[in-house]
Length: 283
Image 1 (cartoon, rainbow, N blue to C red):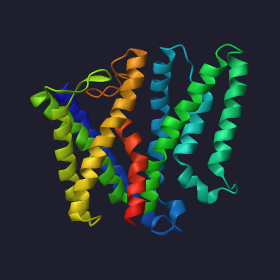
Image 2 (image 1 turned 180 degrees about the vertical axis):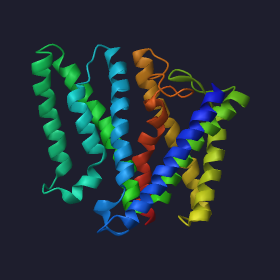
Image 3 (image 1 turned 60 degrees about the horizontal axis):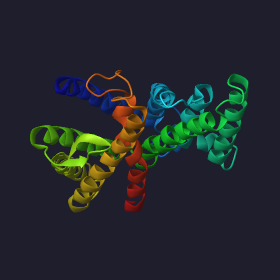
């Protein structure tokens, strides 16, 4: 388990850093654009986020199916992808209130698809599950490309690395020293010792980014690391609630050592809006 986490965690880290930094090259050299030309910023990050919506929704659909609900994938997938990347499309949109229109049309599309595919059976459950999936993945995920577009690659990397290093620190410290349960009902393996390890590593990573990338003062970076370590763990607990309700350990086995895509991005989804808010207040 630990071996696979280290191997695949390293590979995913390298791939993500490569995409973000390569995206910076296109931001500068894409014909007709400039660093400050927001409609052309974050193209690769936007594509990555949109693509991740597909397997994540299939995994969420399996969790919902365990409780008798059907996520209406032909509606949820495009709606989630559009909502998650709306900050990229917004400058090209001729509609004011683009997000409100998107959510409204998504709801109406859910009713239409439900009537055609499933009739009157499970309308509230199925449409509710579909709308939940769009908000959970699309709305929360939208703050990932938005962070890149509005603040730049280093801010996004700082947020992601602080959160994921918190996961690594919590997992490692929990395995080595964990005795006191952090949330025995939702996630029995989480411990306060693990939480402490996650906080320490997150703070160290935050300070490193703050110092070398000149994002914020090191004192504020310590606060950032501590706060987002806790928020990240709450994101993990939120997905654990879904898995416990569905009576399954992992959302899937597509990522060895981690489980599924949802198990990888759960903490990022919850922290992304708070990260965007933090950087907005900082600037």
